[in-house]
Image (cartoon, rainbow, N blue to C red):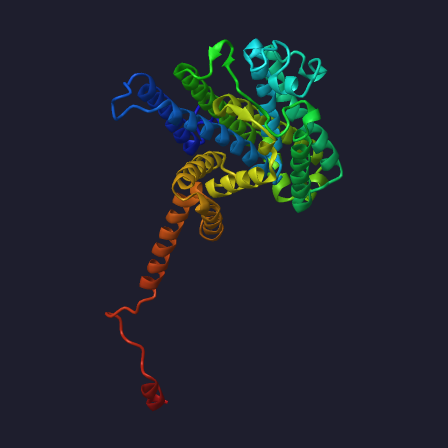
Length: 394
């Protein structure tokens, strides 16, 4: 590989990708090769949990791409995540066939329960995997394109854009709660059986989904790193820092923002599609604005504008959430708020910038101590005459 390539220059990213690859191999080995009675055996439940963390990490990566490098603070990226999840959920529901509670080969159980007579037109084609995967990208991509085109052309920025994205995901949540939308209403889509003919409850399928999540995260990171290292990335940083000056230089700022916003939404949709078969359900709760806000906290705590920091933040925060909700379920939100406050006050660059921050402080201390020693009086040199001596000489 060329030494000047964008990946070779990203040493921290290469370390992160190496750790990710090693984790995929080790976890797979501990689950598949180590017998269950062995203390080193990793249960399928734990593998699924780590797979969910990897999906969250891909979602955080998508947010960091637009927030850390373009200055677009989206509080509605959970909507794109949920749309990708619903596209996958629709495919999984069609795969149930006549194995449902009501034994209807064409209609999902919730449609039979609601007395639907035929499958809605927008459910057609979701019995084919390639069609569903196409809509995993198209559904969030089209929504992001329409929303971004209207918002960026109107030059809506800052907190106003954040509020509008939050309103968008809240409106979608209310819409998907309705039974007549044809997406399962409050219960959502669940009771999945298999994917591509493989049983979703088997250990092999679970480990396969875990590996797919890890590979998708690695490819997503490489894609984002390539973007931010290219000329497009430099323009995005210029837009983030001085949008008006970039516009005056002749760049169509709204076009650059729209491209990266749509790409980020598609990455979020892929994360949602990988998330659904592992957790076994998708419901309107995924559209909740609080999920998008929590997502921004992951990125801030991991390190905004680093890409790998967003991945670290998503994994660590969600691992802490799993532990705290099991031990102290009522204290988790307080702990999350405390972590965010500590990060804001003492770790402005997040966990990813902690090492750099420590090195800078050590360098400052060395520089300060060096300056102090420089100004110490030399004991061997002749001392300056006292004031009384000067007066006497005069």
